[in-house]
Amino acid sequence: MTEESPIKFELVDINAILQTLPHRFPMLLIDRVINIRADYSGIGIKNVTFNEPAFQGHFPERPVYPGVMMIEAMAQTAGVIGIKSVEGTEKPRAVYFLTIDKCKFRKPVLPGDTIEYHMRSLGRRKAMWWFHGDAKVNGTVVAEADVGAMLTD
Picture 1 (cartoon, helix red, strand yellow):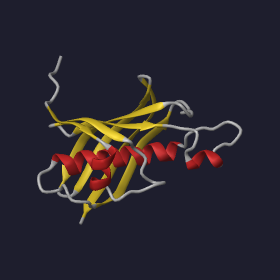
Picture 2: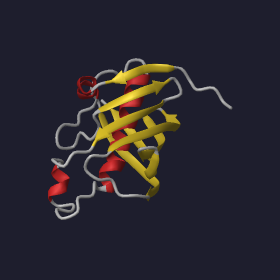
Picture 3: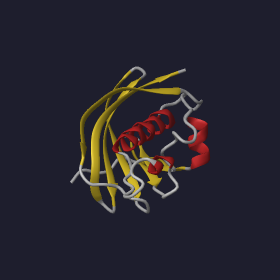
């Protein structure tokens, strides 16, 4: 059994996320990030409510949280982890998607669910980061993907 990396940030709340990422409503898709570790892993949290703008069209008779929004939330979680973890990157920056690979959607997410985005670093080169993410609801993987992003000033 391997030992977990030490926690650098136990909680990044919504106010700190707003200071870290440039995203705003309706495109800010995480509520908090917890347990950011020294190995560049962490967990983003999203409380899914029926008032999400996406539910007006996806799908009004049977609301299902869009998978593409889960992938975007994985990238936002990875952005918070990267920005908060590296010295000198605390100011707001633009975070741009580079890649989405090995993406799979396994189960629908419904209003009332809480999604946990379990992100771990796959690698980094200068301002480019790659992460693997598992989106979980009640411990069950509902989506997964490898995402790459670039941080810019």
